[in-house]
Image (tube, rainbow, N blue to C red):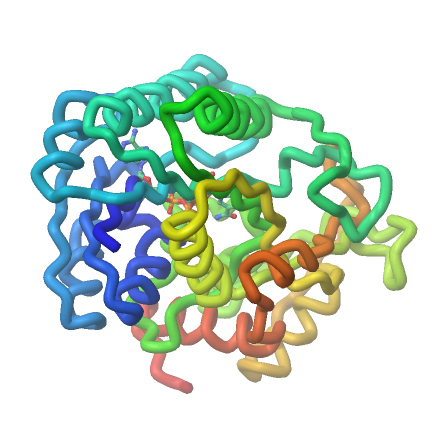
Length: 337
Ligand SMILES: NC(=O)c1ccc[n+]([C@@H]2O[C@H](COP(=O)([O-])OP(=O)(O)OC[C@H]3O[C@@H](n4cnc5c(N)ncnc54)[C@H](O)[C@@H]3O)[C@@H](O)[C@H]2O)c1
């Protein structure tokens, strides 16, 4: 298919582009480089052998998007572009409403104008808030516990409403759990700016010596070792699920809402130990009280994605740690793998 990726130079978008190219899809990348390095498209071209069209634009620029969709005869959009920092969303809600909600409306207007009726959307497990129990199924109650989560819920609703009323023919709302890891080539990976918000990039930065220790927030959760439990998923498994979802909605006029996780909960301490095993690098720990708003345990029931797409995560926690480290080590110029 000819597919346009908003946020295609970002972490999950770039990994998805490698998988899509490998499956013969033609890719147009749209990114404003608010949170991506400028050399990502060139890296993608080297990795995949496909010179992807790059359009440097903001998704709120409907005119440019409409023109791009028409000029490249795009058949479907994968919509990654968004702001994603929970803390920042609470500090500047208008910024998040503008980028995420207005941005998605502008994109959907461009798709309507160019008669593109298929979309895969990056949603998040954050839409479940504090889940009543885990594993979490797609029919669990959704609740926004911060502005970022609210924008994801609104964007999902926008897409479902347009699919129900006609402008969209098919859509997949993909609720990611905790994407980690990097492309096995170590050519692309997650590059957080400033202090990482997520656990794995923080661990890899401790391993390079950039940060002295890892703070473990909460050791008295009702989990096996007292630390918080999450569902980490390798970004390459996630990328493959996007390709399958794209191909599915290319062939069926349906609206899907799917969890993308492994279905296995891993605690903070288990992740740290797996990282140390996979890389041989020690991670010094500091134990600290719980952070407000953190959930004890949240992991997916991914069986619907297995049934509908025939997809299942294949890479394990050691693979995730090894690839995250290979990428971070390459960035830091460390050559010990
Ligand atoms: N990484 C995670 O942990 C995670 C978890 C759940 C959901 N998600 C969602 O997945 C999507 C991709 O996340 P990611 O981790 O790859 O983030 P990312 O920041 O690496 O990628 C987002 C990309 O979008 C671009 N972008 C942002 N605003 C834009 C705009 N207005 N116009 C054009 N481009 C714009 C950025 O430059 C960046 O390249 C986001 O929607 C995010 O909310 C991410």
